[in-house]
Each structure stands twice: as structure tokens, then as C-alpha cells.
Length: 97
Image (cartoon, one colour):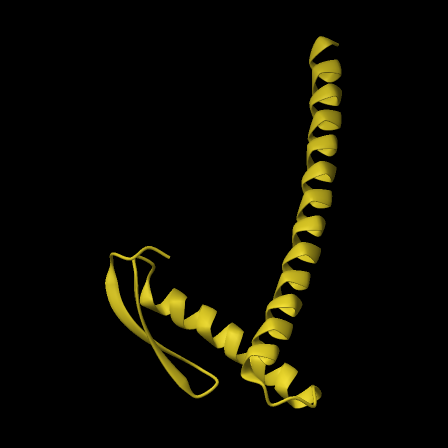
């Protein structure tokens, strides 16, 4: 996020952070809520009270989710491209008749 923009306040794990962003505040609040949820999930299931460790484990979990979704997106994109090519070929054949 850039250093210019609107000043905003978010809360993660009961800590308040003040930032500046050009992103919409509602969007930034959604991001903060996702991070907060993931950190609380890790904190509930991990026997550590070290906030940095909780944050790193939460970041790894979020990165894993992101990579899985990106791979699914790429597979779907490839499937759609192949099907589009197939349909275009069938359409060309039908128009030639």
C-alpha cells in the first residue's frame, strides 16, 4: 500500500493500526478481518503466545490458500480457453456448410 492516501484505522488481534492507503476503507477493513480471523484461528490451534509466530503461521496459511486458488484459476482459465477454441472451430465448420 502506498504512503499517500487516506488515513485509516484497522484492528487485528485487538491491536489498532493506523495506515494510509488509496484503497477503499471497506476493502481494507475486509482484509484486516481476514488477517484477524486467520491469526485467531492459528492462536486457537497452536500452543504459542508469540504474536510474531502466530502472524507468520497465519501468513503461511493465507499464502497456501492463495496459491491453491491461483492454481485452480489457472486450470479453469486453460479449460475455458480450450473449450472456446473448440467452439470456435465448430462454429467455423458450421458456417462453411
